[in-house]
Image 1: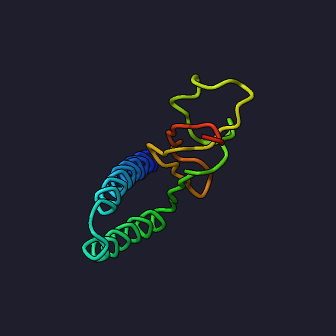
Image 2: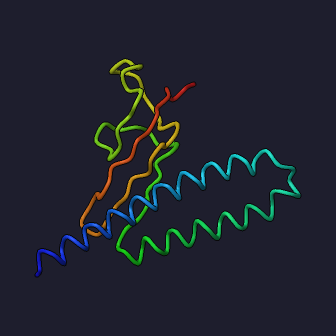
Image 3: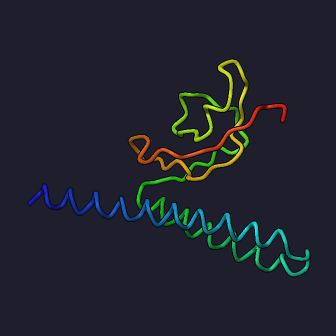
Length: 124
């Protein structure tokens, strides 16, 4: 009985993580679309997007999870994210996270799902 409850909890957490990642991707796409609008038209949509993002974060928090975005940070190989284009750089290049393709999901006991990123040289 306890094993079944643990499996249900794991499935629920996995579903919550999947929904959070897809919502994060959707938010990024909507933000790109809003950026293309005139300033007056975009303001209303920005507020709606912020509200949506806040609700996602609140839902994650209620499940003991947190979404972590490391865009713009200096890349460290120990980060909880895999870099798709790491092979494009020399070992001594100083790299920064250019774009998060998938966010890092953290739980109370550590990393629940590592992220996926692309990198660029610091001086590009």
